[in-house]
Image 1: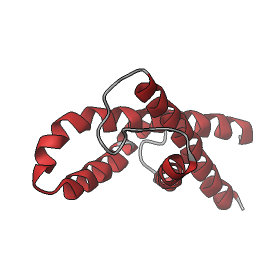
Image 2: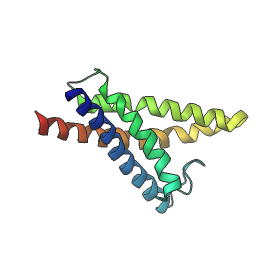
Image 3: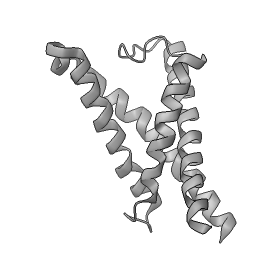
Image 4: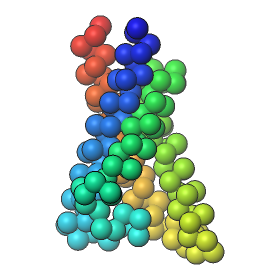
Length: 133
């Protein structure tokens, strides 16, 4: 039963982190920051936000890995690299021949939003563990 609680807690942490990351994307777009093409037009409409939230929720399962368990912020920052690498590889493959040119601009943006996701998820898991211990 406790293991199931950890799985659902990690999924919820990923979902909450994704909500805040999507809100940060919306704020960045509304503030006039130029975002890469996959993020341009960021809004909280369902067909834009829901796929990102579902995927980031599933990435939340990475927090089940027994890596840096005593240092949750470091663990979150380290784990944020996994979806970042996946997203950058996906962007490079979808861009075809222009992928490497586009990645130079996209890397800091992707890393920033994944760090927001990871820190929010880490915060939720810390609150959850404190409540259940």
